Image (cartoon, rainbow, N blue to C red):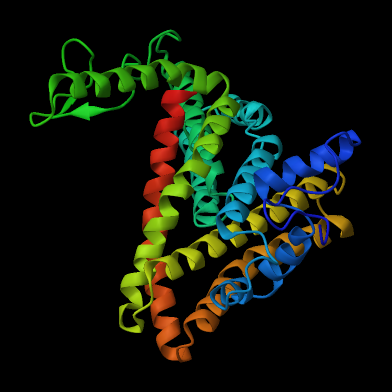
Length: 359
């Protein structure tokens, strides 16, 4: 023995009968590869774009948490915190909306209020798109549907239509096939080149989504939790896709795909860490700092700084890792960002559909 571990098999000198705290430490080390390296990893991950990737390429790897474990842990932690902190509560907003509609005495006034509120919702969705708050778009869309329902109810009341008369057929989820609403028996999804069991599975999912629409209106928070639980898996799929995009973008550099995968893992790990910090900064801003106070302004600036740092960090990382001139780096960064934003939008939409089915 020449040290705390056996140089032949790696077993530590210390025995297994130890305080329970050290056992939890071993658990973190074995599952997440976290020990003193976490301090050496998180600081450069957030503050030094490209540093961890270049260290990994240089062979200095044992000092830091491995890229996949780092991304996995931060993704799971960030979206777990998102489930706890992101709230979808339309109760108060809907109460104010219904009061506004109740005070309207003409159909034109109701339509004006409805259009104004829908315009605010549309602006909110545009502001949230492409930011860590993007999963909250589904909650905004739920609010849009409820505004339309409240407006339709008030218009029917003003026109003397019976209150129980529906504005539209609620028996389907809005899916239209060849001009006809989806129906499990009369007009199901039928894709000719798919086998019967695949078409049956698709229709089963549509049916589950249809059944969940009513629950979504009662409990939009359940939909939010379902979507946020699916997004980490979605990111795990997007990481190798983004690495392939980097491979094609820098094809002339003759780098291995694994090198681009390390860049993708560190990039997404940083985004998850920035998202986590944004969520944590939003908690005191919403809970302990009322709107208009100096403390609330400070937290708003912190959140804005974090959101601004994300694209700047990724640009600097791409410049330092691939070491190209600024003009070419800016062009490639813009193209990559545009294409990846489209992929991310499709992925979030898919996550929303999966969440609607699985909620």
